[in-house]
Length: 303
Image (cartoon, rainbow, N blue to C red; front, side, top):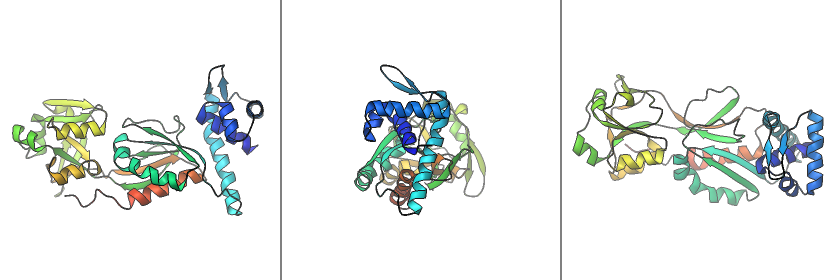
């Protein structure tokens, strides 16, 4: 199978424009269209829906896309093993991450990364809402939950300690809970799914954080907004230490039930589709994030 046609197909999926993808690879629009048509004839399926205004992936194209990417990665790995691989990292890297973490830690590092790899285009999807990595055609994603999908592979970026916090003003007005059961009488800020979380104390005592049982609830789906409202005295919330370590240090937030934290051992994971070969663009970005963020862990050491 012609890997240049596969590159054209993958780029057309990213740009949703066959002509633009062809130009990026030095092809005239007519040549690009012909090569896509020949690839579709070869695989026996329409991979891209065309209209006069736009291009979109067919269902067959969605199924074929991860295999096309893997075949390209396999070729690059084979050439690199012979010393004939590309010296430049190029193309488009589609990366998804929680917006809260990206704003604080990833965005400040991007200028340095772009300086290192100026031929690589970053296509970022930032949201605190969960998404499907394969369906969204992402090359890489950051998640803060345990990997359950067997079609994905994970590499740990850092541990993720989660604790209960409130502002001094809130605690002055409503009192400080002494036990987890006291949370039922407080205002809790929680994510919209109202997920019950198990807590454990330093002496091994188990407890439950259950927003459904609280007297008052404020529901949302954005971590930065949750932290901001907690600082402004709207209630008690669970936050990752990486999100609130500065506020804990300057006193704008206070740890509540400081003997307790989440019973599970959450971590920040870099997730990517399972493959025999990790593409060069994915590998260099993972290595960069681990070096600049994972190993330095700027939020560690906070009480």
